[in-house]
Image 1 (tube, helix red, strand yellow):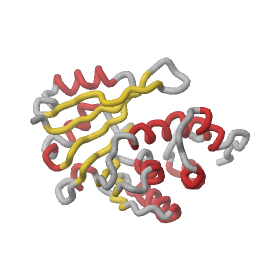
Image 2 (image 1 turned 60 degrees about the vertical axis):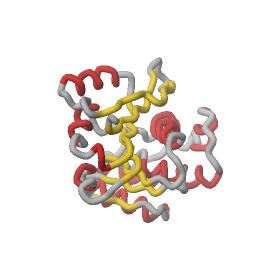
Image 3 (image 1 turned 45 degrees about the vertical axis):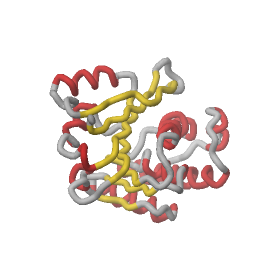
Length: 215
């Protein structure tokens, strides 16, 4: 893939007023170049310019990073090409981050990204709900892995096995919540919106939802 360098990552980050250190910018740039190098073979992302990466992937990951406490064990559910998990690991080196991806080829590539970037992240070629049979996490993070009802179905027997799920969603989240309720999947789950922020280049709003076992 030919990368358009008429813009730069640093310029794109400044455009959206994100507080990112020089060291983090360097790591993020290395990650993007690895991701885009592999993208033609595995279709890992549609965000193949610096601006799209920042406006979509980095902003969502940055918003998630503000909700996590130092030292927490975090699992990225269905990481795909490494978002948000790898980006979170770069932004927050005080977190213990694991990534899971059930598509074996993608998991192997993400493991190579982690190795090349020298990040202390475990990569599991497995479904998240299967991992919860053996591991415990403080927080699960999920982005672009499926509608709310589907995620609730995955974890319906596991809400006591982790602290909470933080899900990045677009403006359709209210309809997704209704669909989950209709299926009876929120009966034992507390769901609340914890963050809302503009989706760059659109009139829409992104949100982060917090789901956890109801008390």
